[in-house]
Length: 372
Image 1 (cartoon, rainbow, N blue to C red):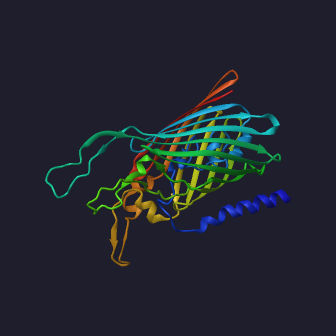
Image 2: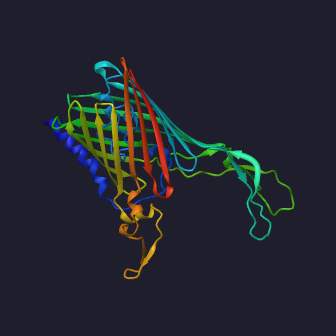
Image 3: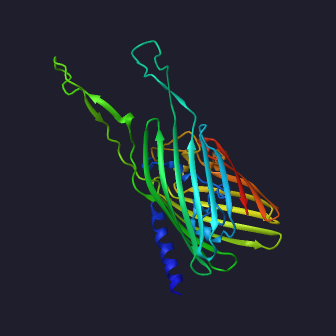
């Protein structure tokens, strides 16, 4: 009874931030830490209360306690603007002690050429290539651990190092994920909460911020230049609070239907309500669909790319009703399919996920897992 009270109190605490209705867009860095992985992406990113495979190192480390076999997973994501997102994770059960996990995240892009600045006062275009190229990349390495503390309650933690790079500059920090998972034992009903990316502020440093300053620019006497450097403003990591519920209305030897609902509160955007469904047939074929809805409808409409219109009654700019443009309803819609193939004691999992990103177009993700 005492443990149940503790669980209820923690879930209430995680729910408190969900009452806010404002966003602090663009106030945090390391945005690649929010790019989802695994089959949870196809379920509208409603996965915190499921987290029963190797992708738990991303969603909720307490879910590692449900992993009973060694598993290695690799997820590739063709992200927006020719950016690639890759996530490699491996989990190892340690008997009755718990389950350990390791994860590596990489966000990479091709080289870009630095261009000159165009002078608007001349008729000749000067914004041409300089012949110098740069690139940018983000990385994270995490170590996770999850354990059952009772026959129904699990908790887990992840410690990770985070680094962002652009040309000769980099920003480094550390972060932590913490999660709990509780199985009620009634119709597969599961409750979970997680806090992701709690950590230090990070700031860029490197030689691209350095320059030489002339202490007396108007003096006829030459003075030696003084070395100086710009000071970069620190920025926080993208902190996320998740609360999730999942249950299985259908569960037998041939069929299983899982319904999941997540409530998410980020520190740099509006809250979202995520709904996901997964249907499994003979534990071999899986069909998934999901939807993520922002609590602020105007922001959600803007993300679809619809042209704003003037509301002559309220004298404010707004967006067309969804009934005027059905395609807006497809924003943040996700779907996917999975195949599980077993050969002897080894199982192979192949997962595909699609997500409609509105004005940012579509994303396609593929994952391969080996369970042994």
